[in-house]
Length: 239
Image 1 (tube, rainbow, N blue to C red):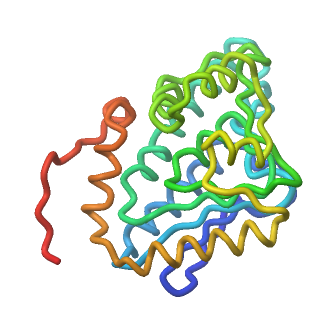
Image 2: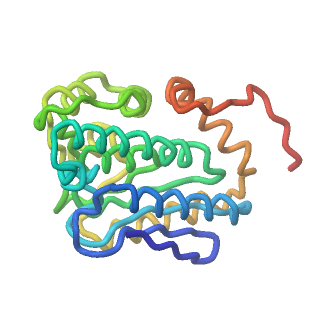
């Protein structure tokens, strides 16, 4: 499941345990609850770091839970249910009134990659873990909001093609070189330290949270529209 720690101005959300951190209704509900708590407790100088224990950052939707429905139709219905439930998670990250950092210390695949990509900054390790969109390999279509996320977050069309149409598994050093992640480091400790350092430096700017969130939503207009997020074209905030 997930835990939330407050460390000074930093919120640290952690997927706990040594499993694959797959998203089923219980995990998604826990994630949404913690993101709501982060938003409610946000102040100027706040920042969020999302990280995970074990080999995986997240391996996406819980396909075992979907298949446990016992029929092809039941599995499809459960999968669509998870896709619908997960949409507000991406919306919550996009509208969070603070900078966000994904500390990727293991594999981030499918929905797990989408979750990481929904953060403002991605920090990855070089020695273990890949970014991977498995849908083309396991014969699943990609949700509309995932497509919008990749279109607006990854500027290089050839990189998007390789992720979505080739099932490319990209390691940290290449992800840094291709501009998919902010930086890549040699091990788990270095990734976590760099993520805290980045989040603290961003927090020191003490930006107005609502303005920060509005600018972010405006930066990704197609994704915001698909998620049903309204964007204020011009906001004057008291400094």
